[in-house]
Amino acid sequence: MSDAPTRSGDGDSDRQPIWTRPERGSRGPAPAHSRDAIVAAAIALADADGLAAVSMRGVATALGTGAGSLYRYLSSRDDLLDLMTDRAVGELRPYPPPAGDWLDTMLLLARRQLALHRRHPWLIDVIHRPSGIGPESLAWFDNCLRVLEPVGCAATAKFEAIAMVTGVVSLFARSEATAGSVTFAGADLAAYPHLVAAFSQPSPPVPRTDLFERTLRGLLTGLLLAEPPESG
Amino acid sequence: MSDAPTRSGDGDSDRQPIWTRPERGSRGPAPAHSRDAIVAAAIALADADGLAAVSMRGVATALGTGAGSLYRYLSSRDDLLDLMTDRAVGELRPYPPPAGDWLDTMLLLARRQLALHRRHPWLIDVIHRPSGIGPESLAWFDNCLRVLEPVGCAATAKFEAIAMVTGVVSLFARSEATAGSVTFAGADLAAYPHLVAAFSQPSPPVPRTDLFERTLRGLLTGLLLAEPPESG
DNA sequence: GTAAACTGCAAACGTCGTTCGCAGTTCAAT
DNA sequence: ATTGAACTGCGAACGACGTTTGCAGTTTAC
Image (tube, rainbow over all chains, first blue to last red; front, side, top):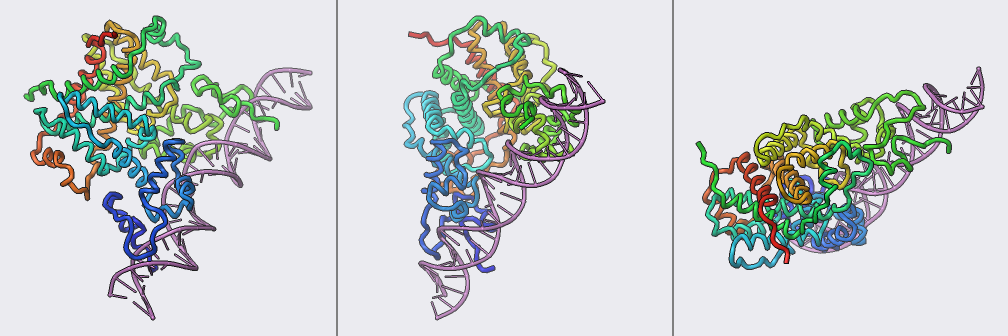
């Protein structure tokens, strides 16, 4: 009953989110690892073998230590996933300078987000958790607001639009990641007449990049430019 | 080394998807449960306590049996989640008759999807898995194609549009479910000037229902009505 | 110098999905 | 009728997971 005051977020100090929690105190011996090294190892594992490979034991083994040792640096696996996410979002820097139309700039940002998803497919499995908006995510959001500065509409509308763009990008990323894994094998197709009719006369596939741009363009113009319905 | 031929999908017969796999053979005693009862119990658990409550042991306990016994009816937990999803999608019936504008009908369908998500919040955590397109999901998709029949564009474009609508609905559902759980507590706001500027002059919140309709309207018109860019 | 705050680590805890073996039941074939 | 394969439920076990705990050793503040 003498120690356990910090542990990088144990018991009491766990109320502090991972972003502001100090990595270590000033008392004990120098730590053998660091949050950055742990997060880097976890990302390498996730890039190579998917998010399921990011287990505490797996990351610890990659670092040559035991699973329990990681809890000197993190308070939970969720913390690790939050840190991974924010570090990946940090790869979106440097932000491209807002040139020309704000809509074009937003599309460029969306394309860079999609590229990030392609580079780190595990992001899809990680972003939908309710926790963990880190400093890099905030910075990205801030940059989007900067791009949308010339748009004359309420700030809340911009919030919604940015969130929706991010969400749609994740939809595209997911559809890319799971493409080809869908199968109706064994289904009784006779019960779905419109489906078989649509399949009977094959149509050319929609170019993904066009679809991406048109979707987001329609989305942003609909959300930010169209006049809101008059209330009353 | 004498038995283990079926087990509702064991070893060899696991190649067959859950949708076409027979529930039981014709030889042994009458089963004490059924797939339907198991799925119903699982959905009740998920509705009440979230998807995490749907563990094999949890579902089995709710049915008054042991976890291992469930594998007489299902071959995996993923199968159970697939069955749950399809059963929930079945609640979208009966489909409203296509009246008036196809766009209005699609918005109506989207609204019913959103209502389904509100009724079964666990759907959000379950739909993004690459597996499990069941007969009810196919029927829903088929019905969407029926609504889009008067639209004169390629079938592939309709596929993309339907998938995008479903995806956007899930985005809204998720944003509703996680509303209020985001927090920038402890962040150094000075680093995000546009964010604080947007927050400094508060703007009225966007009505969710308007946002929903405008988003989907912009999406569908952009995807199905706008002329595709000429190739070459 | 002493005590508190730290460090790494191995072992353990509880939960999870899943497998296995066994005793009992039903039905098709003889 | 009898046999045996195909089934049933069930409890125990397996391996992996996230996390906790206790302990021995190290560093720093006072």
